[in-house]
Image 1 (tube, rainbow, N blue to C red):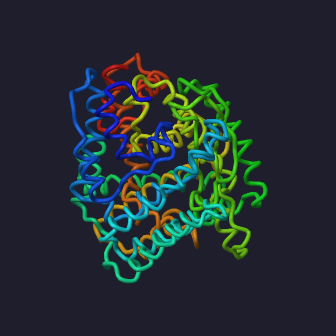
Image 2: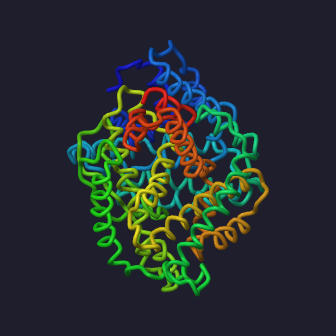
Image 3: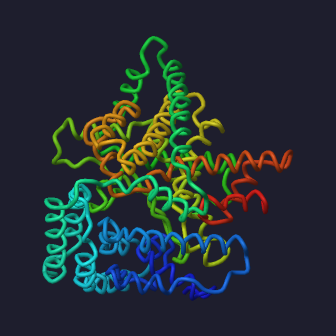
Length: 501
């Protein structure tokens, strides 16, 4: 249970219930839903605040999460605009993880399902400002939640049907726009990450990085075939993938390869435990890849690297386009990101982080930024140095995340349409068909899609600062330990790693 500075941390956790239950393993929240009604949110916000923490870094970490909650739920009332928090509130997939005996998890699942009608009532009351496009985007995820309801559970199923009907009405009658505006996006990001955000500077850096990574991709492709254009070479790489049945076997071998290489190089402080490979749950079928680790407050157990083979019901060309994301070189890079030295290794360090704040509250830009940084790190440190296809795949995935950042800013500032976003993905990342459309749709429900590249830049900037300040004492192992000792902090606080490392 949370004991350290219980009042302040508990108030923040109450406003981030699904995340702290799943990502931190705070299972005292099992069987519960967050009250996202307008009155419930107001009451939760009123509980924020309290005496300062003794450690200045942890105080700043906790204060950033408090300020983020005030901005998200208070200033901008995103729970009245975006269905995503309400759908997360209903999600039962957290109980599929083996963190407790099956009977305990089944009981918690039943209690959670019993609370669905109350959560749906709150959602329908709150969601009175949903733009039509955002409602339409959420319908697929809302309907997939029905797959978590067993036959006979008609009461929660009827509640979900009411929410789906509410979203269907909003999709027909909601407002025309989805853009929150640059000022809102900057304010949300600044509050959450304890750093001033200038979207124009981020966009300019994205343009410069786009050019640099295009050059790296072209150079790697020339090493493969100096006579062919990079686009043709990348098409060959993307088409080199196993069939749907072979993707999981390939991923299993790649996890063993990347974790062994990470351990040999001594890149991270902790790489113990077991990482297994399996498919995503049906309600998570929009995910390309995920890592679910044994969370900080859970008993130790295996972590799961999950991927999504194509739906057998899809047409053959659509299945082939989806499988391109699991091309052999690209899947190796996904394994670096998800396993070692990426999310899996980070998760092992989170279990050892000092104090409840670091173990409970996790910044998405740091978490995703770390895993994305590890992709670049792999090339820098010589992983598969003999194979330019891997370098090309890393460059392609860097372009994917840069495109995501640029397009997220474009969507939120209403300077890009979704069709323009799809074309940008197709032009810059070699995506096609459903993959490009799925990438564009993600930007509707997730205004924080800037996290990957933004977080990676923050880590790279901190690394350069550490090199300058530590001089001959700098090493990657020292820097990574100092960084991961902080847990998953807001990226505006990475200076602590340099100062204390």
